Image (cartoon, rainbow over all chains, first blue to last red; front, side, top):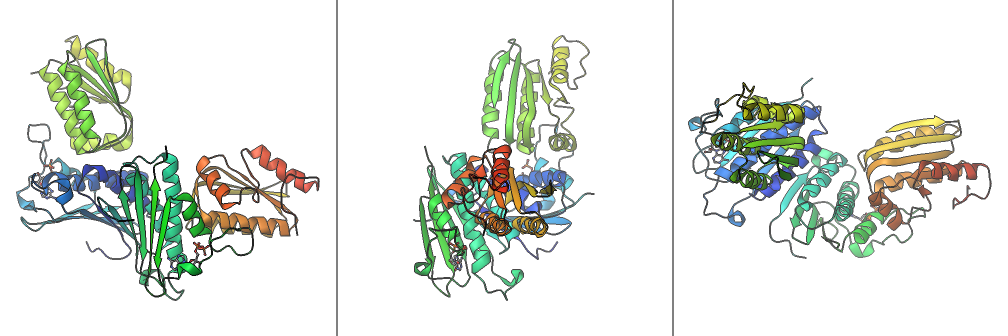
Amino acid sequence: MAGNGECVKLVIPCHPKYVAVVRLALTGVAARTDLTVDDIEDVKVAVSEACTNVIDHAFADEETGDKRPPIEIVFYPRDEEVLVEVTDEGSGFDPKRVVLADDVLGDKQGGLGLYLMQRLMDKVEVQSAPGSGTKIKMIKRASR
Amino acid sequence: MAGNGECVKLVIPCHPKYVAVVRLALTGVAARTDLTVDDIEDVKVAVSEACTNVIDHAFADEETGDKRPPIEIVFYPRDEEVLVEVTDEGSGFDPKRVVLADDVLGDKQGGLGLYLMQRLMDKVEVQSAPGSGTKIKMIKRASR
Amino acid sequence: MTAEVQDEWLGVVKLTGELDAYSGAEFREVIETLMAGATAFLLVDLMALEYIDSVGLGILMGGAKRARQQGGEIAVVCERANLRRVFDISGTAELLNVRDSYDEALAVLAAKRQGGTSDAPGEAE
Amino acid sequence: MTAEVQDEWLGVVKLTGELDAYSGAEFREVIETLMAGATAFLLVDLMALEYIDSVGLGILMGGAKRARQQGGEIAVVCERANLRRVFDISGTAELLNVRDSYDEALAVLAAKRQGGTSDAPGEAE
Ligand SMILES: Nc1ncnc2c1ncn2[C@@H]1O[C@H](COP(=O)(O)OP(=O)(O)O)[C@@H](O)[C@H]1O
Ligand SMILES: Nc1ncnc2c1ncn2[C@@H]1O[C@H](COP(=O)(O)OP(=O)(O)O)[C@@H](O)[C@H]1O
């Protein structure tokens, strides 16, 4: 999942206010690919989940909004797919220890974000380790 | 015209294809300010003019799209205004030598871009010199 | 977002635009206010909503739990394909009684209220 | 974008979406193709257009010049406030015969064609 070729980079403050900006920018980037309107809706959700995770999990509560480093989102639009990378400089986590939600009905609501990403995108790669931030790489291919 | 406080940064390839992405991102950023829908339309045009200028003027023709450094656009949304900075690493120019179009009807069509920026925004500052790139800073205040 | 209590027993919330981590804060409060009263039945109208993600699902699931604790039920009106997809793949469509039309959703709640054999899954605790 | 030649003398182009440096390339070509025929009168319908900037103005000004060189005229239909503002502050509204309705724009072209005292400024060269 190599990030090369033309790209659009977006850097937003670590705050829910700006996740909608990411969806808008994505809409513009993806309009230049073969992705369908429905494909783009899927990517919107997946990318928002990745950003919301950074906001919810990547930083200890003491760090207030202003002090948190920003979230970086890079879009690589290709003809038949779009690759999206969401990177934070937060706490990181052990991807192996995160159980995906197969049962979101119970009290445990954890895992819905990563689960949705995996269901909505064609490929999802999590690069993370405690103490060294997180990078999520996701690919969506144009459906036909 | 100081760029401080929360900001959203966008980096796009130096190609007309991506100017629409800038307008979309701006729409999202400005929605979090007091700017009216009409204010935002004005900023859309001004920012697009700045980007189109980079694409049209900042690089010699030999440099093709891929080899050109990208365009950086930074939005600083504040309660009652938005500050936008458009920066390129292109040839630069002497702002004093650019005559603003007061007559766009003649054969000389030059100067319409900077003219529109100045009419549509409340403040425009051009930082440029031959050989050292260009930074355009623009402020739009919320009308009421 | 508009919210109103209809016929005492029924709270109706109508959402527009996008429901995400930002706008979700208001929606969560609206639901809490509605359910703090006598209302135990909640109809959430998403016909004019354009976007939902796990934050919205979480709030709706919270509303469902609360409704059932109070002996009521939740139903969601939603037709847009992109939203239906999020309900479907998350497995929440049944639990939230997602229906294509307002009348269908209302029927789910009315049936449950009459204690009859509702087509709503999940029992009140 | 749709383009058609009506009644031989009149070319009509209808634009949707955004007219900027990217989409402008297609528009420029369409105008050139239209004007390469016998058409000297150009009606540009921007009622469904959402955005225009100096690139679009430049193309329209080019079309106007060409039309007049061929003894014709251009007229633009546009109602949206944000587009009107760009025409107005650039000083191109009069030169491009920007009108609120299709019928008004058509009247400008018809008057000019009949060689009468058109309300269109600018003479054919
Ligand atoms: N960017 C991140 N930084 C740190 N931890 C993360 C990040 N993204 C996910 N996690 C961890 O992975 C878990 C699962 O995430 P997710 O599947 O989105 O579910 P949820 O957000 O509902 O907990 C989170 O609870 C968190 O512990
Ligand atoms: N980013 C830039 N890099 C280099 N030169 C520029 C840049 N922006 C503007 N210029 C110069 O300023 C002139 C005036 O620009 P403008 O007012 O937008 O009119 P136009 O683009 O129609 O020429 C340009 O012709 C160009 O010489």
